[in-house]
Amino acid sequence: MKKLVYLLLFISGISFAQEVKPDLRTPYSTLLTHLYFLEQDHYSVAKSAMTIRGISKKEAQAKAIKIKEIYEGKGLKIDLKKIPKDANYLDTISTGDLGTAKHRFFPFPGRLPEVYLEKTGSRWYYSKETIANIDRIYKETFIWEFSWLQKHYPDFFEEDIGGVQIWKPIGFILMIGISFLLYLLLYPLIFFILKKIQKLFVHDTYVKSVELLQKITRPLVLIIIVEFIKRVLPALHLYSINNFLFLSLAIAETVFWIIIFLNVVDLFLMLYNDLKKKNFTKLDEQLTPILRKLLRWLVILIGFLNILTLFGVDAKAVLAGASIGGIAVAFAAQDSVKNLIGTIVIFLDKPFQLGDWVEIGNVVGTVENVGLRSTRVRAADTSIFQIPNSKVSEVDINNKGLRIYRRYQTELGIRYDTPPDLIQAFVDGIRQIVIAHPDTRSESYNVEFSGFGDSALKIMVNVFFKKLDWGSEQSSKHRLHLAIVKLAAALGIEFAFPSSTLMIEQLPGQESLATKYNTDKATIEKKTKEVLTEFEKENEEETDDPNQSKIPDVYSDMESD
Image (cartoon, rainbow, N blue to C red; front, side, top):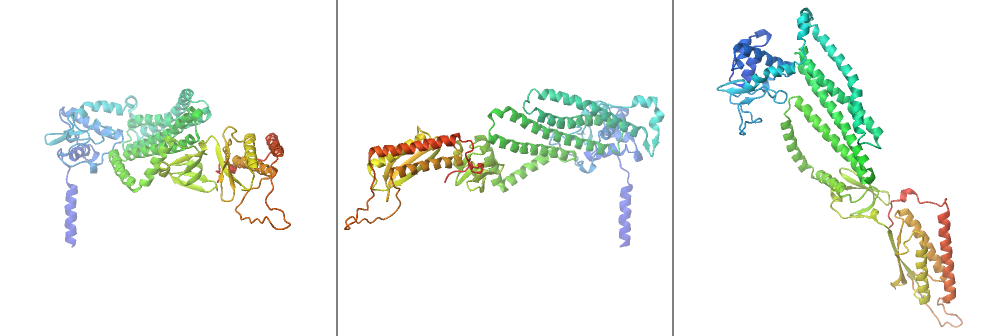
């Protein structure tokens, strides 16, 4: 057993001791050849330059070094584990003019699309486009150089402390100091420009919008400073930590953009409210927070996807996975999707407003809230109904809150033995009461002798109250009912109720038990006039009394039974 272990260790030792030789058969071997022979332990520019063709050896060596410095200056680290080892690798993303895939490989398609490998014959080389553009890319990468200082102070640039050249940390500190000064200069300037722009659009919400502009200005200035640092950083040649620094800066920049757009959403909705304030409805007020939530979540989602791409995750793969996952979630949560669609339909059609008294299916009450999933309705007994928006968008909705008047209908039952003259006088008296009532429509009402019931003569009373809230209606009905009762008492009319009457009219010495009515016309007119005068006087007193009792607000949106 020991011999087998020793043999395996010996074989592995031989494999690790083997020297890497130049190999251009695959994208993996070409990049390995380029970068391996530029490392300090096995430095050979000539072997590294074999990955470049079509130019002289001297130029190829210079460009091979520049490509590596560009990678390091931009903080791009090649992960050889992710490089394809297929000699016939095809790039299916960036196709040719005819839409056909080519033998190409882009190490960093997002951040450095102009640098890529291309197969020529049986070998992979850096493409002609890469070689043609490498000098320009190098100058753009190292736009801030210290060549002048290096020429005049060579000793300073060569001194080091603990293996680190002294000029690099000093340059880093200077970069941070300049960034701080830029912040102090740019913040008031950009804030001033944004305030001038927002004055063209914002009026009533000026103070609040200024607060939002401050929240937008700060990350916007920081983004400018991050871009400045990203320009200067390659010149410091901090190759060992450049990858970490650039990744941190990219994440910070993404977070700053997320903060900016979150505040832009709030500013946009504020402008929307400001422009629509004249035609703003209660439902629009409910729409604003829902839109705010949706837009803010969308901003956060896009920002999160962008951060994933910074860690090497393919954005297209993420979106494709999200689409497939979205379909699966949609099938698993069909009711939620229906409710979301129902919410959109409600806000587009606007069948009711917040505070309206509605009848949705079997639910009757006041609309209190419209959310993403359901609508909340408070019934007359103050209980709460949560109705799914998918159901709200499908059923018939009776919006009683849009009524112009509140209709009230009742039937009065009087005794069968009431004389016709008194019936007519009673009906006429009720009509005059309705006309004199301050809360009823005098031009639209019905008071008629409508029919014969089982134990009473029926008088229909159909009126329309002007005040729409439930409490006012009850108060109006109270005064109407009281006036009718007083009129009936004055005229001697009795209300009927289910009963059986046994009348014996011929008992010796007994008078008839039949009700005696006063049908004198003058008396009827006098009594009716007295009741109406008293009713009108009471209405005038209630109108003039500033301390008259009011119906509590808790009942203002309730519906009568």
